[in-house]
Length: 172
Image (cartoon, rainbow, N blue to C red):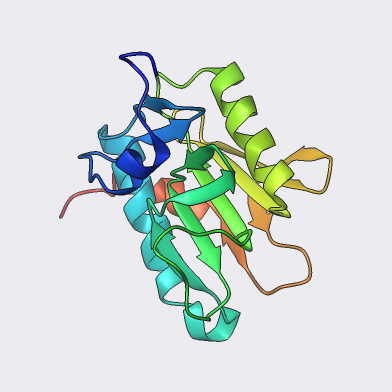
């Protein structure tokens, strides 16, 4: 094994801050920590968390998702059915949400989304706080939308409402 490679067992037994993804023996850092990314993640998590009962779905931030035998992704937010879950998710989440950071590239985002699709994730949202836009994939097609949904469920988010809260006006 090359010096830069890490075994899957070693990865699974190690905590990283921030967590890293495991891609074919290589550890990959995630782009996190900038205000707009972190704030939007907090807002989305609060939105989803307040609706878990009505949606019959549980949300988790930065949960490890085993998308294949040698790939573990760490999406920003996932929604899963309210059943006991393993430490590393192995069943496709109902929804995967990725929030773009300025350092994210199109090819990295495309590779990440393809991994989720191969795993069987039916709905993926990619949200860009810089441009205040969102795209959703339900099936093979990507659609730009300001209201993101999970087809066949009550799960949704109005992006304008989220973006308006990133930097709310201060007291008068």
